[in-house]
Amino acid sequence: MEFERPCRAVFLSRPNRFVALCEVDGVQLRVHVKNTGRLRELLRPGAEVLLSQSDAPGRKTAYDLRCVRSEGGGWVCVDSQLPNALARDYLPRLLPDLLWLKAEQRFGRSRFDFAFQTRRGPGFAEVKGVTLLRDGAALFPDAPTQRGTRHLRELTAARAAGCEALVLFVIQRQGARYLAPNGRTDPEFAAALRTAAAAGVRIHAVDCFVDQTGTRCGAPVEVRFDLEER
Image (cartoon, rainbow, N blue to C red; front, side):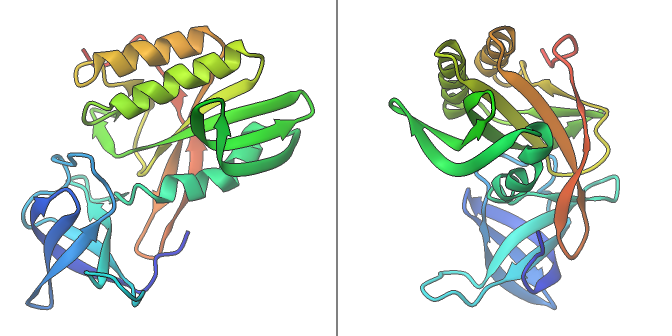
């Protein structure tokens, strides 16, 4: 996925979940943040960030916040809308007998990121973007997520109904040795993920290559339950 008209900036502050103040060539700008997570380990005053300019009509801001330079020096994509776009290209690798893939599909009273059909039958997939990296462990979530827990329970129900089901964690950076549920931050989500895996829901993770021009999926990353944060 390529970034539209990227430019470098300096992060100043985050007045609310959806807006950041950044400085570009000495000018302070209000920038749209497409991520409601805390991002505390990344959005530090003075951090180098990457913005993408948009001329779409009706916008309150002219820029979107795309990436943040981590303390280790690499770029981290913080746009929570990109993982689904990346997943659309990556899911066929996990489903070699895939017949079709459709976004935002309902199952009963649930809505999943993707529905798919393989030669074995129908299935559903949820995608989660991951930005938090600690001591080589990619951790999800970085803030409690009732919505994420509900998705896992709904996928578990779909699996019990005979459908294929999978979760794909898109780690929006490189450097992760493994992915683990962040039980310290959200024990309910961690428990729901373990339950889903035990019920036959497939759990996958993949990292991303990120630079100033865009991002793309990289290599599979091991999922570890025995080393989850507590």
